[in-house]
Length: 304
DNA sequence: AGCCAGGCAAGTG
DNA sequence: CACTTGCATGGC
Image (cartoon, rainbow, N blue to C red; front, side):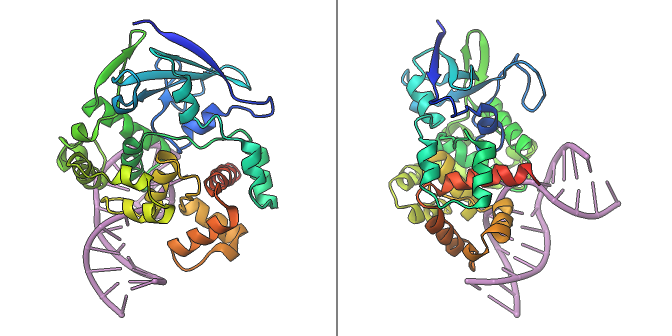
């Protein structure tokens, strides 16, 4: 099968493409450094290439399709795939989001200004919903590198194999494929206490539950509540699925880092529980509050 | 050796 | 509703 190559403009020169920061920092677990270009988190000096496998259900060819991308310059991204990947890559990396307009839509303050200046070019990924749901169920009390490892392990054990340019890849399992796993199977794969959550959630989705698709059509707060029906999904994981997997840019996952950021820099937004604090945060930062969260998260972790 | 890591569910007061 | 506890695993 012929491999096609394309190049995408990311925007104006001041809109730096931060591929590594977008794909390696815990917002997505659907992308990974490619074979032969250094494994994730090493310090290879070569320009890293990343791959994802487009699920068959979202692929123009009807089959799972590997896609490779790399940072070709400050303003251009290259891709390789067996089909024209320009629309998919543009969507998955939100390359059409106008970062300047997003920044201007929020009330500025010293901390947010510093965050935007330091991490300018950061974008919020837009991943397939089911792999995002499972990955963030796995994310509880776990470091980023190990969540990536779990995602790869599940793909290799339960996902379909495909190839690009002779390289073998494994798609993330469909709900039906993952539902064949028992809790004990997943404990053997070192998912720990998350094994039960993943097994039961995969079975729910495979058994015809349409909660992910239905949530996409709901208002934000209804959608967040709806996703907590899945075992292992609380408010925080639900927000991650909404932001990174269902395109709700107002979703603000309030993890331990964001909570302490709110305590330190936005104490007036901290209310009683998760729901009321979330509402205050969204009221303050507006419909792109998820972007504020992304920039603050990276800024406060880098200066911790 | 103990503490922590992008939390959650189940159980109390 | 607010607060506590147990939960797997691995890196430091």
